[in-house]
Length: 161
Length: 140
Image (tube, rainbow over all chains, first blue to last red; front, side, top):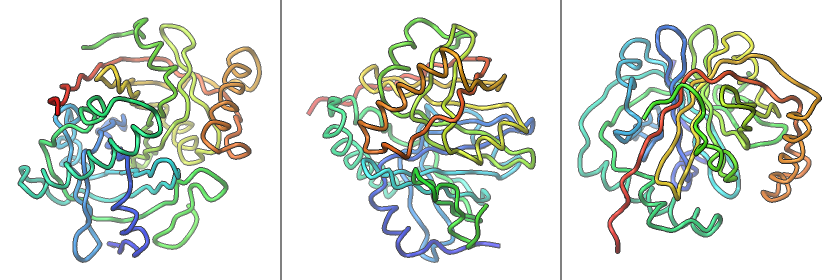
């Protein structure tokens, strides 16, 4: 059953600075995929992820095989973090809107991290490469992962995992 | 570029203070992604991950030992993907003691004193290492 992203998490999606995705193959071996941007559907039941070519190895194969995807988004420096779990629904080529989403994320990431870690803005911009794949996954669960005693609590549906 | 063991050049990445990310998978096939404050070099064939409060990750790893870690080398225009297999946990000894000191330092530097607390050093065998390169962004 699909769930709906709460309003305060929708707001968080617009300020998160780091996105990491996870798939697994049919041998239950996990794979990591950096995400270059994300967006939520109008009905707030589906997230779209943009993945750069450096991290697409095995991605669609795994998604089409078993559909399982997890996405962790974190805001630096507050450490506010949520994990979204769901099922793959569709993939498509990149369009101009995706490029714009990635560009906004790249600038947010660059300005935030440069001010905290002192890395060069050129290096940080390179760290959010243009995406080559866009795919949707329908949300099933959202977990709080902000470090602390509440980490791991399932936010939606409401319960503790 | 692929490696079977940890190359020497990865040591500086492990010590750069940038958080890493880990993906595990439950036995019923659900991946789980989380942020790691530290990946510790043990030897060319193994690393230690800090076990603090990642309960779902710990549960996954105890039932399915496979893990995948992403290391971030921003100024090197690269990332490193480690395929790992959980071997055992240590709650004392030099690896645990070193990690405990480093976790305290990270907690202090990131405003997480009292939140980050090392429960164990989980030792993983390295199964493969992949370096991913990024193109420098155009100047301007």
